[in-house]
Length: 197
Image 1 (cartoon, helix red, strand yellow):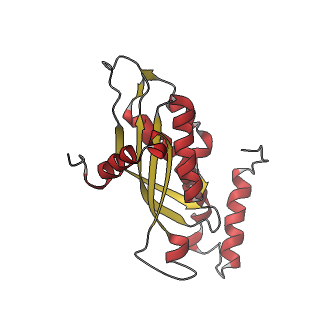
Image 2: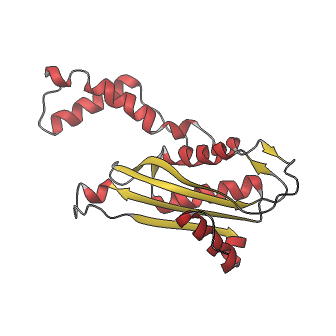
Image 3: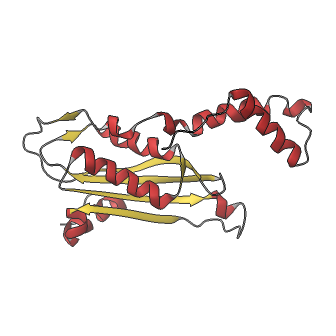
């Protein structure tokens, strides 16, 4: 990410007051007095991913895995993100799988990688690729698979106002892209658990 001149907290709170006035509200009204502070606090939480480096979560690995080289899948990783086009919430879940190549990572680290990318302004397609690419680059597994399913409030609360729709994106690298059986096994895992034999 390019270096930016980050505004002060006071400037951020003033911007919220400006938006309240633009919407037709009086920021000095009792019920809105603390709103700028609350919004800036919420932004600090929602966009905490900018202060993290997803790569660092994957750098501690374990090689004593008794030769384990089968698929590892962490499914149903809930996340909240925000659309970079409308700043509206994206609510969803991610499924991450990889084929280890001599080393594994603690499973909580996969969830942290998802969280780190989600807590930024995002486009779902980009976030899906970012998760897969950092796992591939750091762990150097035989393959990585990421599927993200999400509902976009920029579509449900504005524009076409379509509720109940979700978007699914995937990035398949290595064996997951090259081998239909490996890809199929991963997709079976994320749909219903253990694959049928």
